[in-house]
Length: 232
Image (cartoon, rainbow, N blue to C red; front, side, top):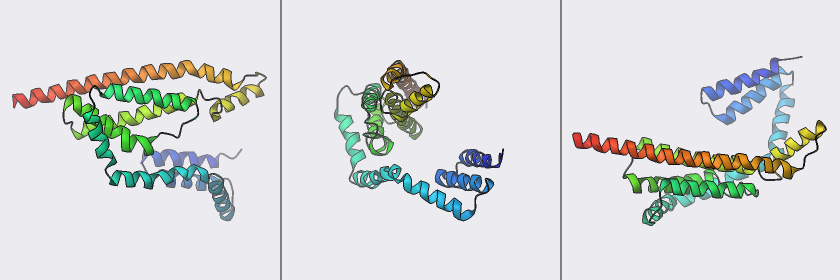
């Protein structure tokens, strides 16, 4: 058995550790593995081109980027900040927990691309979460603003990841079904999806608790800063 093609895995690991461009790392790993497997350069380039063309639908998300850019240029983030600032009773935990629940429910019915980092988190959720946090704690240092934005992105990740497993036609559900069928265990997609439901509920509860603890930690830090400023 030829183990040299596994050099591509090493390229991926090294590239990500050094934080190189992911596209260059992945393509470079493919080239290294292909050459190590004995493929000629023309055949390798043909394979890369065929793979790109066959999966070009995955690049449709790129069409959202110019739209989001135009909206941000027109003041979308500023409007989101001011809108949350005018709402009474909106706190960071309430906002993010509500978004988490909606994101999970939409993912459970297959609407996984109706929200996301590019189209929702960056232009809307992150500035809204920032405004909600500043309503409770006042102006925040840049470090804590970045942490609020990171928590917003994590909330979207958790909602999608643990919600889509409950969707019957999700690829992972069908993959699990096929694996069990190969080993003589007949399962319907509905049975697999229902087993994912307790995990989705647990993920919602755990992340909601994380959001609440984040809010408490933020409050303690702001109070410590205020005490330090008063002492000076």
